[in-house]
Amino acid sequence: MSGPRLAGRVALVTGAAQGVGRGIARRFAREGAAVVVADIDVAGGEAVASSLGPLGAAGARFVATDVTDRDAVQAMVDATVAELGGLDILVNNAQWVAPKVPLLEKTDDMLARTLDTGLWATFRAMQAAAPVMRGRGGGRIVNLCSLIGLSGAPLYADYAAAKEAIRGLTRVAANEWAADGILVNALAPVARTPAVDRYAADHPDAVAAAERANPLGRLGDPEDDIGGAALFLASDDARYVTGITLFVDGGAHLLRP
Image (cartoon, rainbow, N blue to C red):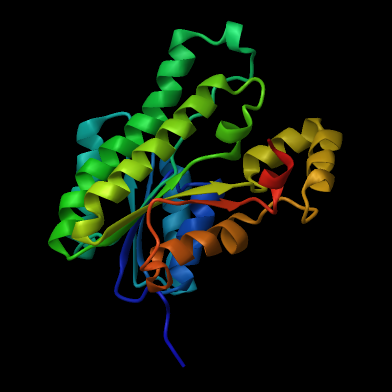
């Protein structure tokens, strides 16, 4: 019987203090990875990191990180290498979400912050991580995008723009870094996160309707559903997969043009 699928690997997950990032960090821990939880939320990030050891993580650390700061992103990668011995898997999950308003009401500041915490943060982290991975003979990068970028959902102009730009960045990196053994893929999830739960408290009918509309009849679990897909892309099972967008959405993309 084979052992844990990520045994001997070091993973870094940004925005891992809650939601999808937390779910992915926990799933990686269950498969024996050493995991760095990176987030601007110190209390939440420390709590997640402390929960990973009992799940089976080979090691767990929290690194307080502002992904809008290039020096902080580089320090995040440096701390991962210094404390856990290397870096094999990078998951770019961090993303600020602006207020949901029509395109004509979006401000420059909303767009700038959305791009800075999403596209630019992903760009910075990939540039910091790739040389480390190249020196180790390869690695895995998983970038979080969104079905919203494909569907053009109203009220999300800035978010859609950021996530589609991340998909383009993913494909270019996959091309450029394939020879180095660095596989780069995008993940588009639909998940029941704390943010969805907070929204459901005030809009239960809307969330219930979204669940009914989903072909599988529910929103994904961050750890078991989304984390499982991230695990696939991070593992040797995906050693011949690069440059794709994997929809982990219960079939929701089938309902979109």
